[in-house]
Figure 1 (cartoon, rainbow, N blue to C red):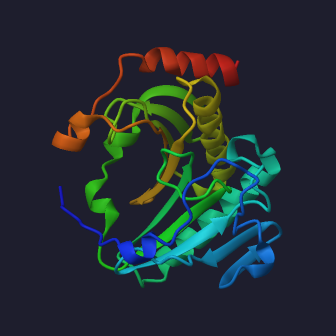
Figure 2: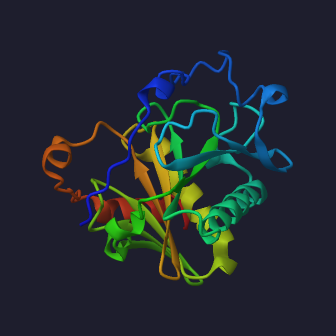
Length: 252
């Protein structure tokens, strides 16, 4: 495993908004008239340069998914869900293919334990100048208990999770089936928020390894101390029951 370290600019980070679920509070992403550094627009979708460039040797952008804070990824209509995913993949892969970065991160935070600073639905696309995330990620982390498969796209629960305990995965060999990936990612996020241990936070991470694309959807709780202190991942003994429950709820 390669040990990589990103430098966080604390002086900039302290200027960011604190996470707040009160939708009556001011939200800069709702205040579209005052947004600056807009890189691209597709209807309600915006890609903007992140006002808070908190990482050293990196370029941070934000994909603003909707016009209001009331919307939520797990409830998007399918047509809009597919539009969001295609817009994100387009810009993620464009940054990746530009040759300007060692690697490009693409991820989503939702909820107070996700590491996000705003409730408003958004994703982040981050170009890293010196770090290649692929060196620390193995395809093994995405295989496991099958939940469902459509065409060539697989939906699984990890038996070798990156952190633990329960990590949902989508494996996409062909970009022509990106809409199926979007459907599975939405199913996992909806299950987490509505049926999984009263969880209200999750992350979605996207990966490009060799010629295959992956998504990992991770329910967020307080991180296990065994991982924090020893980097030992844990897997729950309930993953088979979880897979069966998802099949019954969403695919029966």
